Every structure is written in structure tokens, then in C-alpha cells.
Image 1: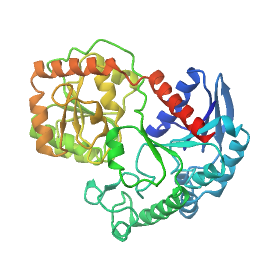
Image 2: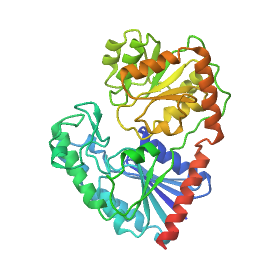
Image 3: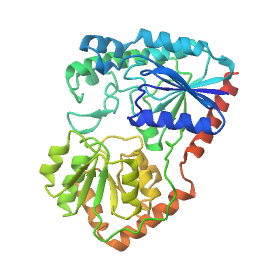
Length: 402
């Protein structure tokens, strides 16, 4: 068996790209011949059982507006180059796994995959398979979308995070995506049950769905001994839809100390909402792990306003024995036992503030962290476990295809 992993960008800085690269390496480490093909970047590097190939395409955001728009809607060159790569492999022994296509690949890669006889899977890191802006979220109203994708009301909605011009381009891309995937016949991999629930009834017909959590690379350590003066923490991009501003407002209401680890456009709004909040900026994975391990974080906040498919920070916190206050809209709520390993709340200021007040009690937060640590390490989503679940899926796909 050979597995071909497709990732849209070669810099591997985004969540989908990181998971694609991590999955590829985990499969290679498990003894599977694996090829990681990225739309951008150049070269062909072989590292044991892992072969990295870059198609050399430009990111559409780096192109002039009109060229970027056309390439984002349907990139013929991307489909041609991918088809050339696929033709070089034995179709009877290969499966393809697509992680993202909205930046350089475009929906044209679905046409290339359909022309190949190789079975393929698509991981839904977001909802770009059916929603123009990818998050199925109303950026104008700051709430999840409830409109039928590509309906008249959807087309008229001013929901794009940038502009109506961007909305028009994304709508065109969504129409082409729908055309290219209308026959179905492929696998959908959700990274959480919450993500699967959010997409129910909105996916192409004739598809098979699976839930496989993203891999988490965390060294096993004892549960953190939470310090009495440890602040709450929000970890990730500082945006309204991810709940960063909500976290600041709730901390202000609860009179709680909070640290924001990350950067993003909501930084100024966060400072205005909670002047005493500490904005630490970006932090390396090593330094963040050290903070968690040393008990310098009381609990992690993941108060997402959109139906987030599965924030990795929740798993990382639990692996270190740190509890989580998570939105009922966050897919990572799958792994939280309410009031035992974390707290699941509606994403509003009052509910999050009440949860923070509850976890102001040191004994409560320590007990919750210890329970989260025990539950996480009972069945951790390690790279190895992730690879084995993927291998089982791929073997099933090959059997069905033959």
C-alpha cells in the first residue's frame, strides 16, 4: 500500500497543513510508503519511507487579485500537475488523502482525483466542502450560520470576513466544489463528532463518514500541580470567532487573571475589554508545554463562537493535567466529561464567567486537571494511534475499490 497525502501549502504553519505533515510522518514511521504532495514549494525529497513533493504552484493570495481569484475558483494547472503525479503510481495499491485545497489546489483537484481510479478521503478541518467562507459562520452577526449553503439567502448574506468581493469569489469556488464533488464516492474524515454533527445534511451524497481525531504529539508527564496564582489562558489565534474577545470579557466579569498566547486582529479589542489581561504573543510549543507542565496555567479557555471542528489546545492541556472551559460549539468537547475533566458552556460572557469563578477554587481546578490527565492518557490520540486508525481506513478503501 502507498498513501498519497495532499496538503495545500508547503510551509506547514496552518492547522490543516500541520496535521497533514504529522499524519504523513506517522504513516511512514508505521512502515507505510507515503508521499506528501504540497501545492506550493518545489523539490522532491526522500526521507526513508516518506517522499515530499512540491508542485511549485503560487499561493492564490500572492497573485494579483484577478489572477488569484481565477486560480482560486478553478486552477487547471493544479489539476494537470496533480494528475501527472498520480499517473506515476500503481493505482491498484494507492489511496489519496486530501487535507486542504482552498489556497492553491482549488476545487480542480477533485476533478483530477475523480479521473483517477484511486480511492480518496477528505479530512474536514473546516466546512469549505459546502460553505463559501469555510467556517459556516456569520462574520457579520458573530454566530454560526443557519442558511442553506448557496441558497439565495446565502448568496445575499454579507457574512464574509473580508468583503462582498471576496464573498463573490468564494461563492464561485463553492459552486465549482459542489459540481466537482456532486457524484460523491469518497470518504469524509471528521476530526470530531461535533464537526460531524455540524456538517450533517450538508455534504455530498454517496459519501462515507468517519471520525478520526487529529494526532497530538505530547510527551507524557505527571499531571501539573496547578499554582495558586496561575492565570487562565486562551491559546491560539486572537479572533472573535475563536472566542478570544469573549474570553477577555468573561475574565473581566469574573475578575480573573488571564493570559493570551497568540496573535491576531482582536488584540486591541481584548486590551479594551480587559486592560489587565496579559497578551504574551506567540510562544513556542516547547515554552507552552513548560508553562502547562509547571502548573502556571489554571485552566485553558476554548470558548469558540463557530462550530470549531477540534482545537488541539484542548487535548494538549488535558495531556498536561490542566482543565478546560470549552464552548458547546467546540468539537474538542467530545473529549471533555462535563464538571469532571472540564466545563462545557454556552459561548456567552455570563456562562464563561461563571465557569471561571467556579475554577477560582484551587482544589476544584487541581482535581479537574488530574481527572483530565487520567482520562487523556487512558487512550491518548498519539501519532501512532492516529496512524493505525488511518491504516485501517485505507485498507478498507482498497478492499472496497478492488
